[in-house]
Each structure stands twice: as C-alpha cells, then as structure tokens.
Length: 334
Ligand code: TRP
Image 1 (tube, rainbow, N blue to C red):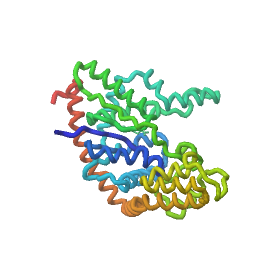
Image 2 (cartoon, protein in one colour):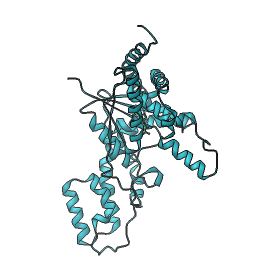
Image 3 (cartoon, protein in one colour):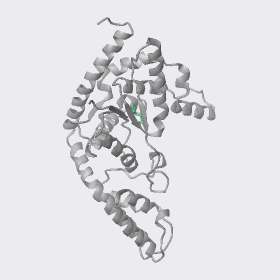
Image 4 (spheres, rainbow, N blue to C red):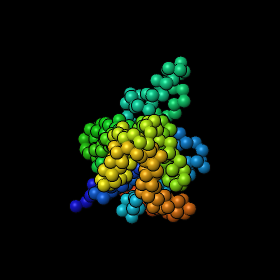
C-alpha cells in the first residue's frame, strides 16, 4: 500500500536551538519512518522578514545542514526548496480567488501587527506587507499541492492549517468535486516543553536558548549560566525544581536519571558539578551531529545537490497536480 504523505515547512530564520531539536526536528524525522515525507525550506515565506540576500542564503544552508545532520535521510525524505517550484505560486494565486479577505484579517500574525499599531497610535497597516497578510494562502498552497495527508506543526501554526482547510473546502464545494485533498493537522502537544537557561520555556524571544551546534567550550559556558538557587554544596536539593535537572532528564537514560536524582537528594553536590555533568551529557549527545553539521557546512555544493534533487522530485508531483487543477477549473482542456 502507498504510504500517506507528511508535509511540513521549515522557515530559515536562524540557527535552531535545543528546544527546536527536541520539539520539532526529532519528531518530524521520526515521522518519516511511517510516511512519505516532503519537508521543505520555506524560503519565500522567509523573504517577508529577511531582506538581506547573503543572510538568507546562509540561513538556507544552515537549516538544510541542520536537518541533514540530525538524521534526515535525503534518499527517503524529499528535502526541497519552496522557491524551486513555480507552480506553488500559481496555486497560491488560484487559492486567493477563494479566500475571503475577512479570513486573512483574522490571522494571528496580521492581527498582532494591527493591535501593536493601534496601541502605538499608528496607521493600522503600518509596516504590514501583503506577503505577511497573505502568508496563510501561500502556506495553504504548500500543503494542498501534494494532496498531503498530515501536516506536523507547532501549536502556533494550527490556525494557518484551519485556514488551508477552509479554503480547500470552499473550492471543493464550488466545483462539486474533491479537487483538493483536505489535510489533517498534526499539532505537537506542549508536553515536554524544553526549559531554557532562565527556567522559562526555551525560546528565541526570551533569549534563553542553547543553540544546537555550539563548539564545546561555548556550550559549557552557556550551561554554566543556567539559573539555579543559592543552596550550598552540602544541602540536599530538590531535582524537580531545578532547571539543570529538567534539561538533564531530556538526554539521560533511566539509570542516569535515578543516579542524578540521588546525588541531588543526598546533598554534597554543588551546582557547578551538576552543570558539568549536564554539559558532558549534552555534549556527548550532540557531538556527532555537530561534526556532521560542520562537515556539511564545509561542503555547500553537496547541500545544493540534495536540495536540487529534492526539488526535482517534488516538482514532478506538483506539475501533475496543477495540470489536474487547470483542467478542472476550465483553463485548459488537456
Ligand atoms: N509557517 C510555518 C512556520 O512558520 C512554516 C510553513 C510554511 C509551513 N509553509 C508550511 C508549515 C506548510 C507546514 C506546512 O513555522
């Protein structure tokens, strides 16, 4: 039987951190075992915010190298670049004809801008470009062009998926046939949130992240900055209220976890020591990925080749789909 299709987009906007790795990258790579996966670099989405050609180019390499280093197998999973498939933008234009402006008015990202402008007594649309406004439509095209079955995303993208479904349904309704497959959202639960350096959720907006591929010395320095309480070495400590332990648990096996728990509860272990153990654990886990990442970043021609291959494979599917759509909406007879 043919496997179902999983599709997701990755915005090239900065080096991923441990939270991205555990929360998004690892589960998405797991999913490729059971699905025909198409994962792409959403570079035209990124142009809405990254307007420096050199920076964008570099970020595209960085995310591609990250996913490859973390275990994405480009033979099995199609890794492609959004901009390499012109038909996506054609489909997006078609979808626009069926997208009420009011639907886009309700999109979170746009609404947040309007609210901020109102608060600052500026024109409501100050700094809003049409690319931001129509962002959910391009995203719908990304999804619908492959007849995707599941779309794994974080909770912040749930509304965009609902919009894609709405648009597809109104098109199917209009033509009286299933022109577009209705995808299923696969929303990541917020369980297992990764703790950041300050104890809040690890997030770029809190500036509390641990980037994935720091050299060991820098990684160690950052881990030493994790916020702890002021208990002395001798005091017994509560692992369940500790930011160091919260991270330790994510990488350790059961034996390591229970040993560490005992060291906390027995007293006699200082924070410096706990952090050193955390560093060693994370470093051992990430070293092979870091080496692979650095090797890939030294070999950009290879990354180009992977993305080109993936884009050719992905485009073949989309070209067929667009042909089908054009015929069914009365544009071409053949
Ligand atoms: N909007 C997504 C994000 O910001 C990226 C994205 C673009 C995407 N197109 C997509 C995700 C299609 C899933 C499916 O993370």
